[in-house]
Length: 196
Image (cartoon, one colour):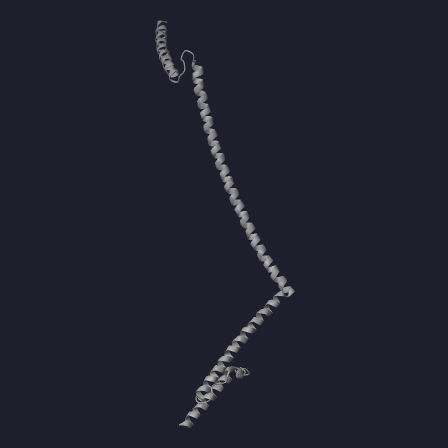
């Protein structure tokens, strides 16, 4: 039994030393955080730290949740914007297709009602007037060529006829013009031979 008493006394002394050092350390810590060590019980003091750490962890998890919700909301918003853009593109394509269909319907309706025939007749009359102008220009060039040949042949004779006198001249085909010019050239060649 003496052994037990000796060991128990030894352990008690160690525990007493530990308690004393713990009490000194506790009073230092409590006074460090601005509390009175004689009034503040250890349960209250460490309860403050427990409340603080649990509040800290809760705030941290709340911030992470808010961040995730914000990211999710941004992704949802971006997805909705992309979806809306795709729908708008589809609507634009449908509108373009509808416009094309309307144009074709209008053209078919005009063809049925005969409005297009009027425009084709207008084009035809424009083509005819262009042809008429070209023909008039060609006639004036033929007349000028004839005048030049006459002038060359009859250098000493009277000047060429005024334009008013030639207004009744008809248009010659290209083969007729060539024949006429050839005959005029032949006549000039004969006159030159006679004069020599």
